[in-house]
Image (cartoon, rainbow, N blue to C red; front, side, top):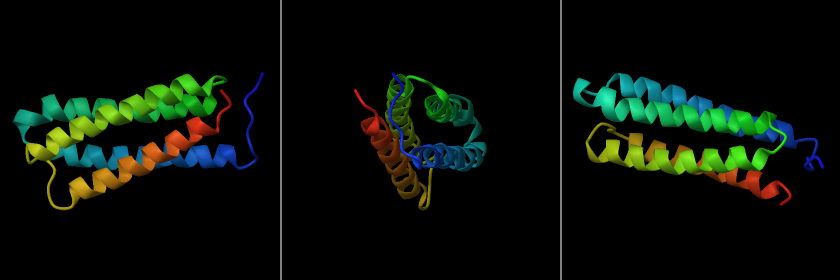
Length: 121
């Protein structure tokens, strides 16, 4: 049985994918500036996890069973939070970057969580 959707749900769900994509672009530019000693360890893991989030959200947008893709994306968001906290504690993210990261990941996580909640069990 197909999952219920409202006329606006497709466009609303596309918004979370777009926000995650924009966050990835921002993060890629930050990781480029990491010191070489962290660029290929912490930086690569950050970028890979951020792409996993976008891929999971995109898969959910197109999948028949959206719940599994959303669960994976939400798990990746939590993993990304830990990696970004590590980068902040190592001094790799400076200025207002930690606040920006927290705000953006909270927004993306909230939107993805609401999307998951809107699906019938």
